[in-house]
Amino acid sequence: MSGVLERAKIRWRVQLQDTISYGTLGRTGRVLLSLAMLPLSFSATKRVARETALIRLLGAGALRSWLVRRVQRAIDQHPDVVIAAHATFGSKGLDGKPVTRTAMLKGAGANGERGVLYSLFEYNWARIAAGTNVRDLLRQYDVIWVASWSPTDYLPLARVLADSDPDTPIYVQASNMEEVPLLEAFHPRIRVIPFLPCEAIDPAAFQPLPRDQRDIDLLVISNWAPFKRHFELFRALRSLPASLRIVCVGQPELGHTRDEIRRLAASYGVPQEIEFHESIPPTEVRVMQDRSKAAAIFSRREGHCMSAVEALFADASLGLMDGGHVGPVIYINEATGVRLRPGHVSEDLARLIADAPARTPREWALKHLGSPGATVKLNAWLREQAAGRSLPWTTDIASMSWVPYPWVDDALAREGLAPAVAALHREFPAVFGADLVEASRK
Image (cartoon, rainbow, N blue to C red; front, side, top):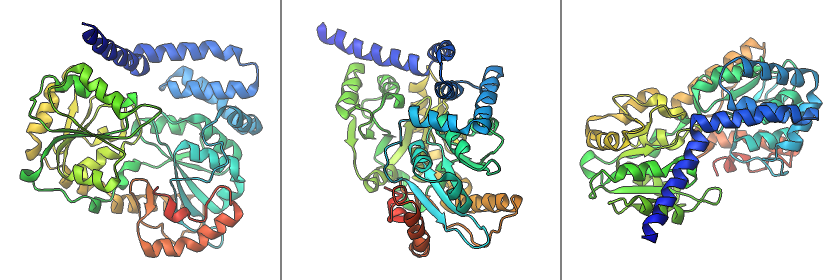
């Protein structure tokens, strides 16, 4: 009896945490608490920090617009306050370390021609803002600030705006197209790239097996953190055949481990013998993707979710939560997969797997997504921006793909960028490592 109660406690705790973190009631509670704390912000720096945190919680509306106007005034009229707010309250990235997962796509040229840096993760934004003279950097380079989550962390973005020349546009790539108008409304200098980072997957990295040779029914790739919502998978599997081969691939995150996920699966009494793999090399992960009939992700909110697009190029049918705030959900259609309806996940997973042979996810992805086309689109967008600023554009960006992070995938292009990397390293040695070109994908 004690074992039954213990398993029930595990299930209830996880589902309650999910409701608080991602449900409407929990979100409303956090908004109300944040509003109550605003009058207690006795310093200007604390007010900016709390206002940007509250903006992150709010959708479009009068309250958000009022807060945005306040932060805009601080950015434009009191940039020192915004910089101090970030330095005091924006702990992630303020560690003095060189940037990671940041690719140089183009070196700076003559006559004011900007180079291009592509920087993923907000902690890298903070490293750049804290460790460089941002104004000088942006006079040489256009930095693409790539959001890793949706909603974006608005405090480091405010810092970048406050630290740059008042006529310099700030280029942002969102991880969810729904957030594009909110980002554009945050400040008139923000320019948002009109497509997602996850488009830049290299199709050639995947060699899908023929349908009749695929031996994994469902592959789930994620870290072990609660926001990945493995419980939704395990709850659904109780109603599906025990013969299904289910494989979960993940890595530790924020103290959450594979053993914890195993206990969670056991608490739901799943009938399948689930395989759990932890921290295996990307090459091994891709082999599993190429063997999978279907792939699914159960998050209700996250960032650009590269593994979703990887599944499409591996020719696996893709399942994402219907109504989830996850960037690649816009790629779900009759050719690619199924939106998993809350309350009907079990039957939708069954349909996702059973109908997989009739779908053509890779064919669809090759027409609409992939690093070659993403590079062309990004280059055209940057060239158009340069023309609008009356800046020269004589050299195109290098081809970029994600493996698993942004990387210049052509050896000759990397060699050509080496002098520009060396110059950037000399100017900002604590921020940009001498191995920037090679290290960006690690």
